[in-house]
Length: 97
Image 1 (cartoon, rainbow, N blue to C red):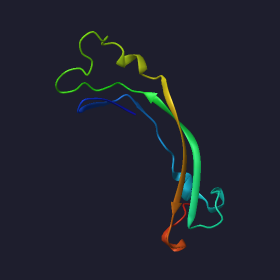
Image 2: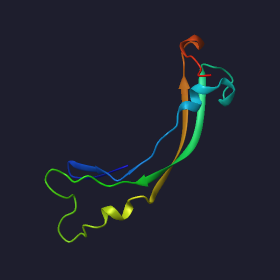
Image 3: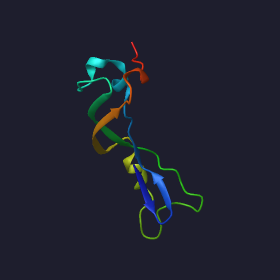
Image 4: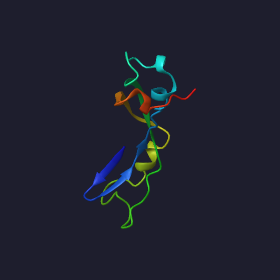
């Protein structure tokens, strides 16, 4: 998750999607064929230390400089996702055992 101001941006939170479930087991997918794999889930965005910009802090003027660090380690948001992986041929993918 990024915060932007003008042409500058900084990363304020991150999440990690585990897509191994798409490739691990044919029976684990919610699809009827191996060429159309699906998965869904939720991931939490956790606050990070925001890097400073080359021209100084993104915060300026009357804003408090401590607000960026208030998000570190905190739940910032949640993403609900649905993915579908379409494989043109069943032989094009090898499943991890």
